[in-house]
Length: 99
Image (cartoon, rainbow, N blue to C red; front, side, top):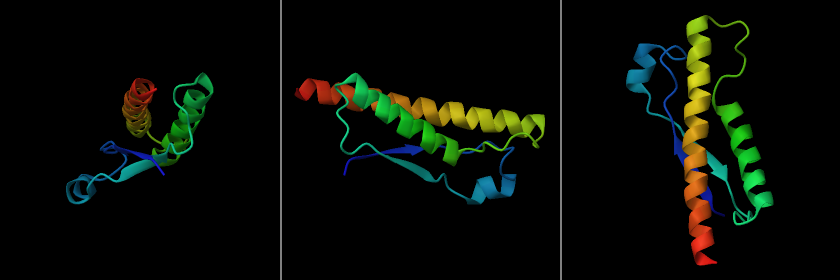
């Protein structure tokens, strides 16, 4: 099964400075197995998997958080999703080159 690994560090507002210093970034693994990234349908399925994984990886329960914590959660989602989409584009180009 092919997998894409994305590393991201959560924002300082979500973790204490001590936790950031002692805790390495946890990898986010998104399975792309069985997807044909040369088709629009395959790319759409991959993007849905990325969106679901990012939602579980970064905080989404922001209603009760401070403005700073909300910003950090948003930045986490944007950063991780951006990294994943860049890796998806690279993997898609490799599949197209093999075709």
